Image: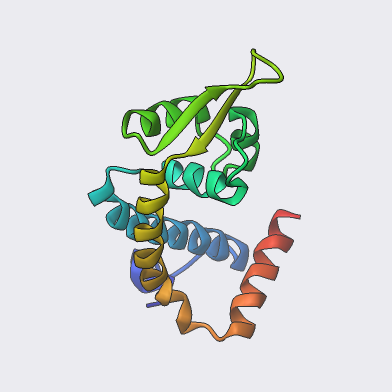
Length: 149
């Protein structure tokens, strides 16, 4: 459905204004789908992002600083997210052997298992992107990169 129909607005100040609203609306739409998928696991999209970062480094543990640097949402409080995941026993925290001031974070077996379950479901929900051809998906990524660049 076109953005005009979704937000019930016929005119925009400019093509740039329309594009900006469309990006924001679409991001919110995708985020809503992700929230619904993650809700049964009591995990937020930001916590899921932390878990994916940890899996990408597995089996090597990482610092909270590195997690924060790699977060999709840079305004997220990585320490708070880590604490919530610790309570659910999805990750573990250990003092770094080389620098006792540093804390290392890694996924638990339970976290790895749940992440695998979520990934299977996430793959299915990302099918809304299959409305785009592979070339269109690459072009969309290129345009979004260009916008931020």
